[in-house]
Structure formats: structure tokens, C-alpha cells
Length: 441
Image (cartoon, rainbow, N blue to C red; front, side, top):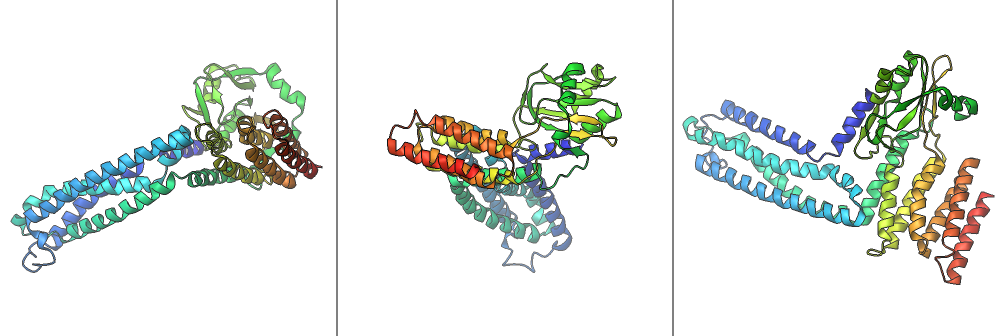
């Protein structure tokens, strides 16, 4: 249940309509509340407030409301057009998958919410303006609120122009993606293991792993799409309750084809079709990849920016190098983090659930493989990759980490041999490559 709630919150954060809808509801409540308070507190005060509240006249009040409503509608159209233009530019230059980051920006949603909320507030107040003369009502609170909204909208419009100009800059986009990546890694890879029921992967013998494929019943995917999240707690509880064991061969971020084998299940009820359907319900599948449990999601966003920056139409090595620096910082963070165990056991130390884990080598490959393959001809980018690997090698703690860094350095060195023609450039690359090997020794 917790996983599905977090998944729903993740979906709501990337929806552009959520905050504007809340502002519309608040505007409607505010309009009715202000009219009620004005009727209760300021009915019959027309003669006592002649000058500061000259909009007590129904015609003047309606004119102000009409002018504000029409202006807010025009400003909202301009702001929406600017937003669409910035989204189009970002999609073309940085990739369509970056649109998610723009849509989840709360400032843009708040600005739109204020604009359309002010419009609705004016429209609702127009309904009550015809009875101002009949009731001798002076809309003190309603008018004061309207003036505050107008001033706020004008300030937000200026800030909106500034925010839009800043948000489409490459450094700002890279910084925001790196911030999301860092937050996600801190969540997925805590410093200390947060599950006392897990045992390191080495505790499971090879013959026990092969037993799943040899004796287990295959569990097919009932839907196609990207595996967005796994309800590990609920799935383990169900498997334990029915005295079964399950091995999954997919992890969040992988694409599932309908009918493909999700994994193998052991136990007396493993061959039951209802059990397989229940297992599928603990897997959240959608049309797109999400960042909630996918450690490589934001990594691939930075990679996409770097690869697009080095395309012939853009040819911006500085943006690619900035992405490499950010990726290196995220990988350095992982060097000192404990990866969650892939096996989950019950209270009697019996294996119940085996997951496909994320590994440092896999994340390192996701970060550098495509950049290496698309930029082997560019000396500055290759040198940046090797210098980043040298920094990672200095912090590597385990043989597996050192081996992954060594393999990546070897691949980079080999890839550039046929692409780089200048002897001096090859010597520079060789020096960086040897520096990585020296640190690894």
C-alpha cells in the first residue's frame, strides 16, 4: 500500500494541472467567504466610507472586476504560450524526456494557479455586484483581496519571465536533474541497511539460485510497459503467507512484454493461476519510466543531455563535460553506499524473495557507455571521462568497484584509438589512462 501511495504522489508531482486546480478551488471558496463577511460586517456602511472605497458603486466595481478578469485571461494566455515555447525548445535541444522536469516545476504551476484563480475570483464576484446598491453593501474585504491578488499577479508575472529565462539554460537544467538524481540515490541507497531481514547476496549459494529455474513455475507478465515500482513489502508478505519463494528477473526501469517471464516461483501454490495474478498486482507497470525506484532514470537523463550536446547540429562539448562532472559526483556518492541486498528472508531464515539488484558496474555503464560511444572522436570529452574515472578510482573500496572502473577505462582508451588522429592528443589520452591504472593498482 505504501508503494502505491508513493507512486500516486510521484504521478501527481509531474501533472501540470494539480496545483492550478487547487488554486481554482481556493479562489471559489475565497469569493464566497469574502462576500459573506462583507454582508455580515460592512452592510450599510456606504456613507461612512466615501473615499477610500469608492468602488462601492456597483458600476465602478463591475468595471474593475471585468477589467481584471479580461486582463488575467490575456496574461494567462501569454504565460501559457511562453511555457509551451520553452517546453518546445527544451525538447528539441535537451530531449523530450526532460519535459517531465519542466512540468513538475511547482513555480510555473503556482503562477498559472494565481492567474486563473484571480480570473475565477473576479467572475464569481461579478455575480454579486448587481445587489450592491440594493443592500447598501460596501465590498471592503472583497475589494482588498482583489487588490492584493492584482499586485501579487503583477509580481509573479515578472518573476515568471525571469524564471523561464533561467530554466531553459543548460547549466540550470543539468543542476536540477543532478539534484533529483542525488535525492533519489539517497533514498534508494541509504548509508546503513534499513531492512534487518535481508542477508548479503553471498549467503545464497549458486545451487539455490539455479533451483528456481530448474523446479520453479514461470510467472508471466500480464501487462506490457515499463516496470515502475515493486511493492516489496506486500509481495514478500504474500509469498511468506502462502509458503512460496519467488525470484524476479526484472527490476524497476525494465520494459515488460506481455507474456514474458517475470521470474520463477517455488511452492505448492506456485502453479495456481490466481497466485500468479496476485504477484502481478504487486508490480506497478506504466507507459513511461519513473524515478521512484529506478536508480538509472536520472542518470540516463544526464546522459541524454550529454549525447545531444555532442550531436553534429549542436556540438557543445562544454555541456557534455558538465554532465560528466555531475555523473562523476553521483557515482562517487555510490562508492560509499551500501547497495540493498537482493535476497529477502523470513523469520526462519528461509529465502522468500530474490530481486534483480542494481550494481555499481551497471550504473557506471549506464552513465558512461553511451557518452563514450558517441564522443570517442572528441579529445576534451574523452579526457574528462578518464579524469572522472581517476577520481572514482581513488575512492573505490571494493574489488568489484575497481574492476568496473578498470573495464570502463579500457573501453574508453580502445574506443578513441581509431577516432583520434593527432599524435599529441593520443599521448594526452594515454597519460590520463595510465593515471587511472596507477590509482587502481
